Length: 210
Image (cartoon, rainbow, N blue to C red; front, side, top):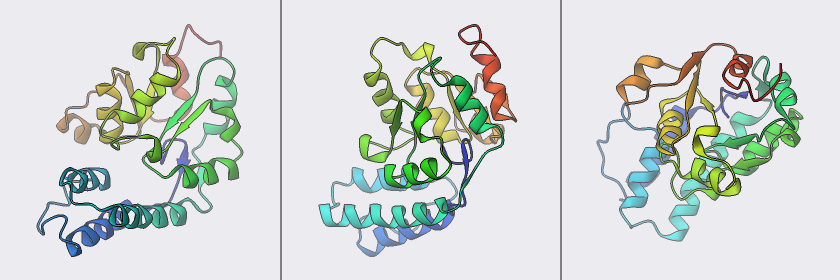
């Protein structure tokens, strides 16, 4: 969702550092993890894998993320062409959002931009076991639409974690203004690369009409 449908100003670097500092302070994770190779979601996965997060610490960790998300989503504007795209696709095929953000932050931004009603399903982190790059969010979408197969879907995102999660669920992935070299280095090889969000229509034919 971030930087795919919405151009948010979430400071993901600061979020990652704040959460890591919190986890180190409470001795859940050791000092010295590489911030270059980790994302917020992989830091959180490392913490959860320790089995040492109490419910209170877990909630406090998510609150740090939520504060960054709510702040960064305030006044977030749509990517160019996003509104026209979702309105065009609405009613012709299923539309779903999978975001590592809290669903409250996601809904606030989507409703502010008046596009929430065009989506059949919005999966925030509350509905996932593990965050992207794990495939849990995409698998949850497939559960909601059991009459569809993974290959009938297309996923669009800007980051390697989107691609890894999507491909792990068997869903073809399209990179939108992504760092392809970084994606390839992480084992992600998109079906296509696009620079304008409305270009996704070219990969949905012949299922829809322009």
